[in-house]
Image: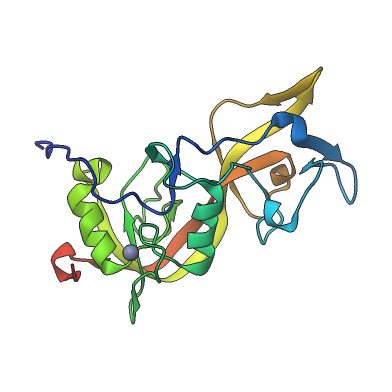
Length: 213
Ligand SMILES: [Zn+2]
């Protein structure tokens, strides 16, 4: 399948990371022992955890300063969009109709045989105009052969993508690679989340031509 030429996006998605945004310090991490052993921040604030109690990675917030890092999402902005069903590009309400909320999705090694039904995604939903523009401009989507637009009647909070940490002499060891861990898994006590993951259920495929630009 021939690749479409890559073009520079005209809009920086709301969820995109900017290179001026700096990760928090590992020295801010501590272990707490009650009610069970878990990772925490020394000066933890309510916004440091998601609604399921998972620790969210701290990154400073300075959107539109520096260069956009299109391939990465700011954890707090990603959570905002997933939890509120905001468009990941313009921060407005995501498109929703009788078939559900609009997402863009593609098959991955993790996809179930039922894909796109029960697909797991960290990519927040979109409004129709931003979906059309993303399809036209996103280099990743342009070259992703299984890409599809879907609506889901039940975008379920499934879990998170994150990194496991454990204390070592003089600091912390961060396990290589990211882990996809469902809510309810006890290993979440040792993980810092970089994104919330939603399971797309009751899915209907949407023809891109049917989306309003
Ligand atoms: Zn939008």
